[in-house]
Length: 267
Image (cartoon, rainbow, N blue to C red):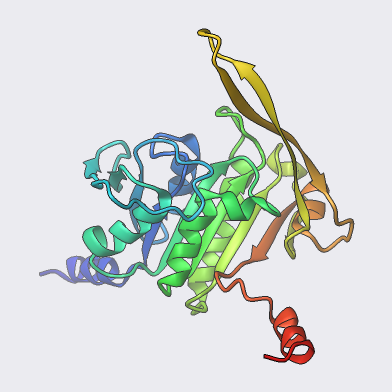
């Protein structure tokens, strides 16, 4: 074997393995842009839903078979489709595709916001959080634009920048970042803010309608309300054209309240 071939073999073996998934399905433009942004940074393996799975949160498939099929939709990139949820995709990727844990897991780029309370409902972020549970550093990327014709130039730039930083040093095994990119041209983005999750929620309304046969059904509508005006939140950063980065965790314990309950109550 020549020195050049030996070098290439060694480089391939030492490349970081980057697992990429999403909740918008393998055919969504966002996942293609994410692959393009990082494809030269390691060995890319895509395992993504075969259909849109937005709003699935941390759901897993129980009681139904899961299908995993090789896909040739992305030139030069190993890709698989999964019939299940984004969390199913991560689980199957580790157990049946890679047969090991990847070095990092990337989820997205989602079409639409995943800031503030959205992180609870988001399939994009649940995939990233599942990876974190499995000791895999992860990031969920979302672009504040629901259009399939959205401009992903800024999202690609900052996704690559963040992944490069993660790969440049040993990341905490439970690292999970929720990254949102503002809508609009790349040149209008002012930079990056590391933020806390805003206290914001939807004022929901179920609009009553009737189908063609006259049967009643309900359609979820509502208004997004930001209830926190401080300047260190993800909502504030995005409103002012900054990329927001919020470190998140799967441990939902309220430690301040835990101390208070231990002090105030006798059991």
